[in-house]
Image (tube, rainbow, N blue to C red; front, side, top):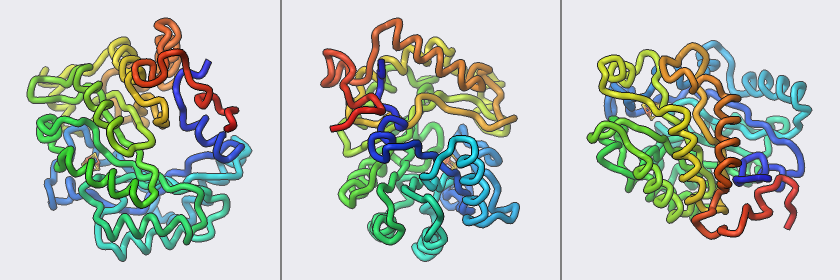
Length: 324
Ligand code: SF4
């Protein structure tokens, strides 16, 4: 039984075959790290872990594409790819810089869709229109805009030095959706907050906030502590305790039941880069976490939307084989 509407299912239905994501490092920075907003970054930001660093090592976007697409074509027999501008804030800087980056994606073999990761406060009308125009220019089936929300609570966003508020997310999500972009919200469970740590209640409020917006996808992350972050110091000083795996499974189950069944789940959990994880250990065991999440959903007969429009069982569109 398919208990949630996965990205894999959505892509299969759309493209009729496997589609792989290709991470791309275009060399953008972040206003929350370069001194524009702050030099400290978000409390969990690992300055060395957020980017692949491939551009700095001399691989331009075409070379990165050739490297990853070649590897994925061999491993998964994939022909179609999503170009994922992943590292840091990919709409930060002048319009011309962003236009130049996007122009480098022209005629990449197998490029079927684009995904752009960014902060909601680094988007204005001109940037959004430029991004939306790439659908025709690059002949894409879809453009995903991955926006960091993290939580729908401004006091927590201030506490973690996020540098933008909830209203920035709402404005950017609405504008992007009006232009036909497929908005994906990033959400984190267990953020440090003025009260110590956000609980399940705050996660569910964040899901309700996302449900009320024209957001078509969501990425869930469990907060883990990485080396070199301010969160690491807080944890070492006894000021932060990450969630246990059981807690995360339980919270995520509740969040999925509340999530609209139409929303595509791009991720169920975070995945630390090699060597960056301090704690909790379980966060580094991706497969085991997935298995634990799946068996939690089975054991408790949980499915996405059970408490939001789909009370009678998982809708048929959760299956990758579903056809309208
Ligand atoms: S927005 Fe991203 S890159 Fe910028 S400080 Fe926060 S986590 Fe780091």
